[in-house]
Image (cartoon, rainbow over the protein chains, first blue to last red):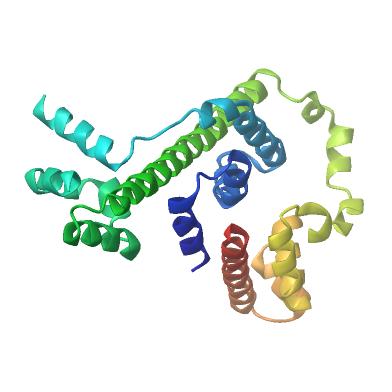
Length: 79
Length: 183
């Protein structure tokens, strides 16, 4: 499946916010059904704007590496 | 080395969904096996570390975005509902304008002008003219099965079946093009 390729690329590089926005297009379209028909276009714009507003915040999200993750996990379970 | 010992001591970490997903890919398992065989070779461990870091960062960002999208749309809908319940459109009280809305001039509406999703539009174009016509009559002009059946000189059951088949086809087509879009 095509989705598989995206997942595999997730191991190699951190995907940029703009690219994520493209990948999440189907998700956005699904959520448009939350509102009535005449507001959907507006909502789509609204969501995309919101994501771009939060761009810096999204960029600052960082994860631990494997060793750190396991250590954190152990510390958590021991507490 | 270090990682292996840690994992051995802490087997329930394998139940963690992130770890499970990460090691469901062969390459990562191979790296782990490689470091098991060659404990002195730290390169595979550092590669594993790096891959996990990139992967988990992506996962976290996608997670954040997904909840942002969901939250935004729920908030937006709430806001619009509040807005429309406070400011009721005064057009409704003006009967003349109300009549214009259902005027025949709107009979010319078709999917081309109403649908903005290009995948859906392409999928609709691939239907037969009869299917398109039935969908237009049903969804745009809100005719019921009986009226459409009268128009085509057939039974309402048949109309309903044609409509359902057409919608099924549209769903499949759009799903397919969504996947291509993702790649």
